Image (cartoon, rainbow, N blue to C red; front, side, top):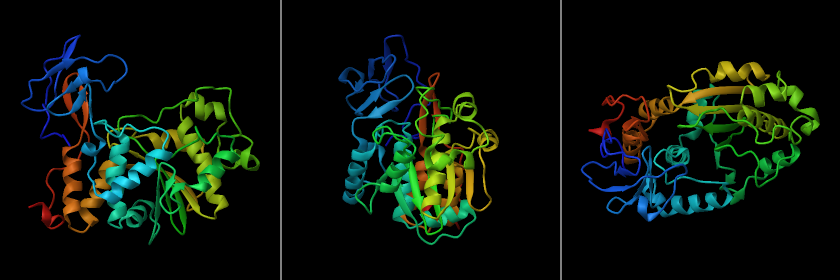
Amino acid sequence: MYGIKDLKQIINNITQTTVECPVKDCSCIVERQHRSFRREARFMCPEHKIYISPTTFEYDSKIDNLLWQNKVDLELLEEIKKAKRESRIERDNSEDSLTWNVFRYLENTNQLASLLSHFGHVSHFDADLIYWSYSLKLKGPWQELKRARYEFGESQARGSEPDLIALTDKSLYFIEAKLTATNNTSPSDKNNRKKYLTGGNGWYKQVFRSDFDTVAIQAKKYELFRFWLLGSWLAKEINRNFCLINIVLSERDKDIEERFIPHIIQVEGQRQFKRITWEGIYDYIVKNAPDSQDKQLMVKYFHNKTIGYKYGILQKAFSVSQNVPVAQHRIMK
């Protein structure tokens, strides 16, 4: 996995027809991509096995973008990909690979419930994690999400798909993770409202202050609209509190709560929208996770992660301190 320590800080050789490999000390120059990203031999650095564009690169193998490569994790990821609508997990700035690397670590080290308690101010002792609608317990799509999609008129092939769903004995969490993408989304067909306004016996009126056009089209919060609607209804059906979590970079979407909350009806302790940051998760890991080799990998991952190039300049992903207190992370010596 290539990161800040491995990549050129500036790519100087970008022309209308060619671009250089971003890995340090590599002189390879390949044909420049235009418009859509393609995995073709003419765009690949043969030494480093990456497909290159002026703004990002993509690994030839997804394994090169994953921290956890044991048999169990890789087999689970393959099963998840069968249920997931799309995946760009090989891309350097992939939200999917980031989500998998961080949350698989939290799950494997039994820290997920503690993390949810930390950010939600509610004590949880255990949590089941569902990746992109795939349930490990069921070894297939989570049936409750399928039921919610059906209730609100969505097709199963193109239905709402949170990045993560966490289920505890008290709460249901829908988690939408962002890296470089924004929260601005609009429906492809503005006249097709499915059963969003009528499903669940008119549940929409119970959880929204704004009408569909205002929140989904004018405010461009269509994705968050769907997650809030389906998630809150489903939580009611299974007798859980509901929280929609939006994970973003610390320097992005700082006002997402101010922009989205006025459109929705929250109930204290029962129904809530919350913004948290990847940097906040990093801080939690540094301060609370037990020392281990996996923690070392996780911390280094946050330090070294990049999100491509802008005007030829390498972009660091996270605003995190490189100075980890020894008492909190002795293994980093």
